[in-house]
Length: 203
Image (cartoon, rainbow, N blue to C red):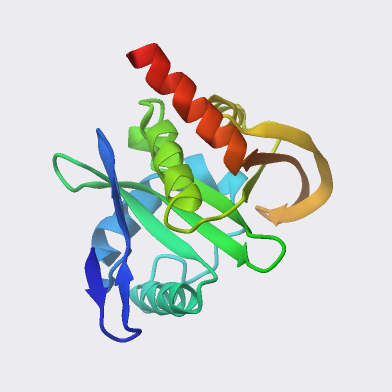
């Protein structure tokens, strides 16, 4: 765990077989921006419309500052997805809209750079972040939403054990248009059952 002196908390780091989830830093800008630039055509149809300063260093610094503020308040946990062997940035995944009290829930969102898509890296990253949600964060419920036409995202969520609950009409404005989204969820008890099954299969 890395120290976060400004907020007196530790930055989370989650390690898997092929990828590591770590907190974004100001020094990540050049590599992050280049991957996003190369993947723009691949990503834009699934994301909110990019701002004119999307790939500017100043915007990245503001983003990292916001990440730290949200983390310090307990509202969100952002991660970059990096290759375990090389440290190369391949995408991002985050837990946001964390609600405590009677809800104990959060929402995950993610993106993968085009050069690294289709390798199973996002599937591993989702499994890792789910474990972080039900482990250290002690959430009861995780939600995720994806556009019905995003077949890659649908496969990732369903492979991770998420259940499709229904259709959210005109849910988010994506690439300039209001889009319907599937709502998926995973409950803590379901995750532990799936985890046990995976261990039994591998034993």
